[in-house]
Length: 538
Image 1: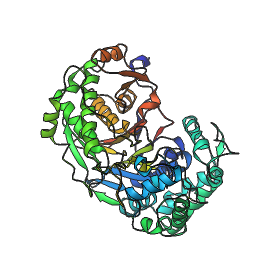
Image 2 (image 1 turned 90 degrees about the vertical axis):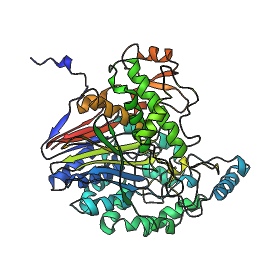
Image 3 (image 1 turned 45 degrees about the vertical axis):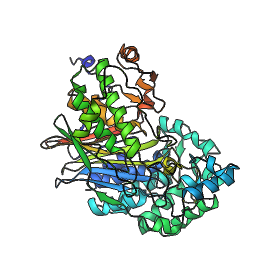
Image 4 (image 1 turned 60 degrees about the vertical axis):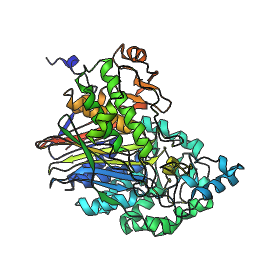
């Protein structure tokens, strides 16, 4: 008889022969598997799953947001794709201050960057990013990979529990009739198990399938986006949209206890994860017992230092020079600040950035050719800005809320500039022919989750599923150290004795996560149960 009590994970790691797809929603995982069954590769499956998530988890992602990918190809190349746009050409600090001040009857110098509304909409990169991924790395056509998403949008799908809970925010956020008609049922959010249809979004996705992403950046959809924003007092034009192009770039990396970890460079926060891993390695954080206060203290303090540095420097590299925060030399110097007690005077977070608890969807795919990809999409905060572009069904992101209107801040608003971006997919080489693609969702939780997942696998030999299920901690902007409610007994109290202001929070505050792995041809994957996720092997 099998002793199931010896298994600490709440799920089993999933295995597949042809491929593995891991997402935050079951129907989206099925969409990815469908592409693999049609002869597509991991990149086709990733875009199909991402597009499906746009429909079945619209509370976190959509065409009106951004998309990023980090991957290792069957040819052995490690690469990255960044598809996020910048602020409109007319979006200067002065113009935004005056517009917001006039709308809210305030002094322009007292205005701060809004959290929602037309001035928070940056150029959405998703549609062009999907298309570029398929054209450069996939095998199928964009039309083929969008089929499941279009089917879900037009025919309908049952809403899952966590998504139904998040959807209620739309009742307050959406003010225009066309936004409420697009995303509400009889003026309310759909309930768990109810069938939801998004016909306007389905028609837009069909137009993208038929005409390509140009329709979003130059065609009638672009006109609807610009008209929506301008009608609410914003500055975006069709020209802003038409100038956008995704980019392929070299990932940044470090080596943690013999494992190479790859992240996205700025304007994303991948540098924070790498600096934290380097500091933790210098401190020997992973040498402590798994269920010890010393382990949590060392890793958390290393991460807080990395956030302090990252939030001082990370922005669009076209506008500011950013130091190599992922260097070993820098980590050795910073590690000297950590002691047995909580450090003082180490700030965390970007004031006014509104990025602590952003909503995101992540998916990971591995195929039998050797491709692994981590693919991440978001509108930033839930349904984004609160604006839906006419009758397109596209809810527009509020990523621009991360800009600062402080003229001396490195992440200050400037025309064309991309804001500090929380989204960070990741890839790790665990052995000579052993690659994993992974990520953790949720604003500032993302790099903190990367550090913990990598350590769980590398330092403590956990399976993929165990690594995701292990209780997490996270620093928060207010300086508190949050821990999951089922963390080992005694650790929160001992952390408090080390000077930490500890808070015990439920699991949803610690992000969702996915991971896939190709270990010498053996494909596996996992999704942890903090959201409605599912991993399917094929």
